[in-house]
Image 1 (spheres, rainbow, N blue to C red):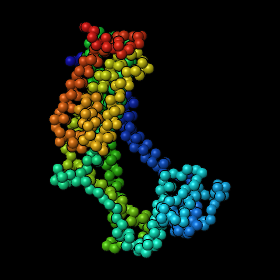
Image 2: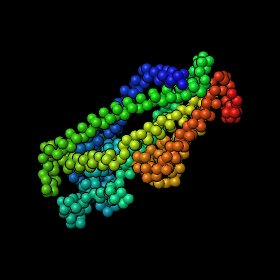
Image 3: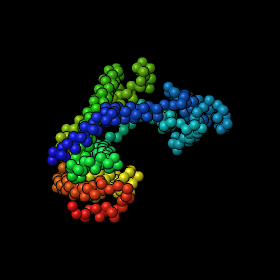
Length: 453
């Protein structure tokens, strides 16, 4: 046991001291968040101002579309040829047919594909003006229509929980995210185990090590040592991510506070003229900002209700359980692969069968978000090779707690399979770790399982 502890410490301290570990641990969450923000920001940027020419023979929208910061509208009551469009200053041409209030169809023509942001902004303006035209055609007051035209909000309520609101879909999405993180770390550190075994085998260091420790002790020490590295890095990622999320929450609350003190008139509908005037004074559309504030407040309320009704401690403990034993299970398989081959090229034939169950688990977990009671979700949450990912969706939803026997069976099978897999991997490891220069087949691996000694 003392020898295994020494190997664990060696594997742990060697990897923790590497610059790559420090960079990935400290800068990883920042780089990911910054990369996502950069992609979103750059995706919203335009190559330049967008000059949109609107062909409106019936004069339905002419002079009624509002220019944006980078979008300017121009109007024509006659067709514009393709050559004239290309030669002109325009970036987008919109054809508004004379029956647009009936068929709700417009056509966009372009030479350089407009971004989705441009399309959305132009479409929003067209919808607003065409809606006004429809109201006038049907002799309806726009202000009255605006008051009664409200979006439908659907609330799911579970009768088995006393009619309380159900957030199962949100919880399932959180569970899928947890399972995906688990898949990422299991794969990343499992591959590290395999590469570490291959490096020691190629450098002949293992010949010195096995003279003082048993191959099985060496394999277990390497697996557990790298597991501690993964847990430490994962906990640090959670801590840093929580700090970043806290900053975002504070910024969101400040924005809501600014909106609440914007001085909006209360108790009566706002006219279009008053809205335009207040927009110029405040620098933003007050009605849109209030809607966003209400949505943000509702989001905070939903998250608080989810937090209150979720056994957070139990969910975290189960996550750590499935993460740890899922990693140990797959790391034993990766260690066996690493000991059987001499280079990474030879690992391909053995890697695919090992990775297929985890890839299948990701797809099944996605379906669990929509149908947590499906038979595929049930069986894959119990089968050990897929349960670490799929069961987390059921745990996050609370579905697993409603079927405690299935949860206990899943946990017991995972532990039992880990023990059996470790025994099998150990038999491959003790033979393959000292074998050099030979292409290993599946048939050869089968023989190693039955070697005596």
